[in-house]
Amino acid sequence: MLTASDVTEVLTEIFPLLRGGWIQKIQQPMDHTLVLDVRVPGQTHRLLISCRPDLARLHITTRSLANPPTPPPFCQFLRAHFQGARIDDIRQIGKDRIVELQITGREGSHTILCELTGNKANILVLDAERRVLRDLTRQYRLAGQTYAPPSQRNTNHETASSRFAGRVGGMLPVSEAIDAHYREQETTHTIDRIKADRLRILKKTLKKEQRLIEAWRHDLSRATAYRGYARYGELIKAHLSAITKGIDHVEITDYFDDRLPNITILLDPMKSAQGNMDDYFRKHRKFLAAERELKPRIERAEHGIERLRQEIQQIEQGTWTLPAIPPAHRNAAAIVRATTSKGHLTADQRRGPFRRFTSTDGLPIFVGRNARENEELTFALAKSDDLWLHARGTPGSHVVVRLDKGADPPPETLRDAATLALLYSDLKKSGKGDVIYTRRKWVKKAKGQAAGAVTVTQEKSIFVSLDRHRLDQLKARS
Image (cartoon, rainbow, N blue to C red; front, side, top):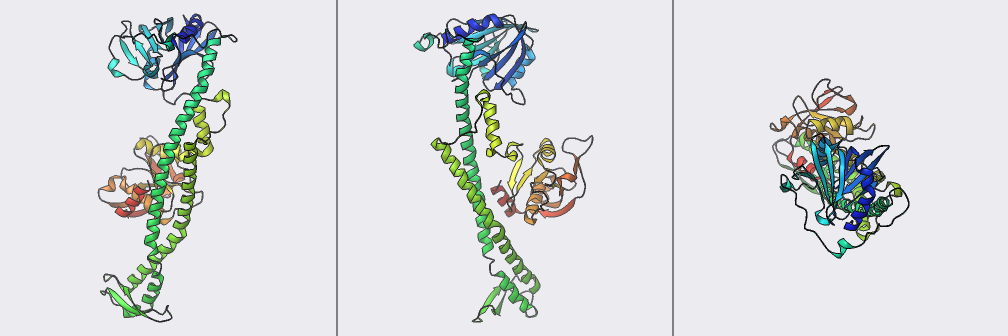
């Protein structure tokens, strides 16, 4: 952070340039950083003020910093009251790291006060009576109070000579030196933060993937119990006329075994022989589907978990690297963009909050939580071939299943998505109802209607009931 002597040096340099200038633009590119574009005759200077504890500083910069889509509240307040104001004076308070900009705008005289004082660094707005109107770090207890500066400090750190004194070269050598010094530090801090955020995401994803694999293994284990059920179905088929409704078992010679033993096959007394035979064949098909779909899915997920563990290990051991970024563009926004563009986060992970689930077949399911999310999900995130669902004739969430182009939704995925459409609709109370589904390309915005209102063509419908076991499995994979 700047010392008091550093502050003196930089103010000596920038004061003649900014005094009498007009604040043209106010930006807040990062949580603790303000940028004021100050117009003076013939040119515009960009004043950067940071109250980030470890990087607190004030200087002129030539860099353009990326801004968030929506300005933070403090920035909105400054724009509303001080855009177009004139800077009357800039001065250092005592020999401390406190700088105040005295400005005059359409609402009279005010002060933007910059405390560049380490852990308690802050930017405050004072009225003409020096009462606190607003502060950047949101210490609401200060509002309305008369400003009192921190106690004067007199440590070696404060009285040390400036590191930037006597700089030569360029129009603003002190600002240029400060900017270059802190740019590298800022990049290092940003990379450390991104690594910490990435590590947190990886560990959270790892836990979810492990739960997902556990659920799939449980499903596979249950389906494996049906391995021999085709044989039971064939044996029942061979004795259909001999089996009557109402019995709960039958003893049949197992002609699939060379020894021809008699075996007992359990029956549902509420079903006919045909119904019991169909049940055994259906459960065997479930076993075959599980073998065909779950085993490869588990294998792919395990490979994914191994990659997650390797990346976690790289971060923890300090060998994880970010994509190369040219020095001129090294700022927080550029690093984040470069990181996500290299595949660390998928487009779906970056878009919207939404409710997110994974179907029995491993396909992503997205569920809107309100009218705005419904509209964004359907018309911004969903692709034309994705499956779109909604409870018939009642308010509810839009549901989208991500599908490959030309692919049809597997039956279990369709039922999973329909169950979610029913759950997040007004039909939830009845626990059953019709859900319509179609391709996203057949869903259009309803003209003149509220957000989320649509017209649908080429739809089909499926009747579903809320299945507690299916919902538990979906929530485990959410």
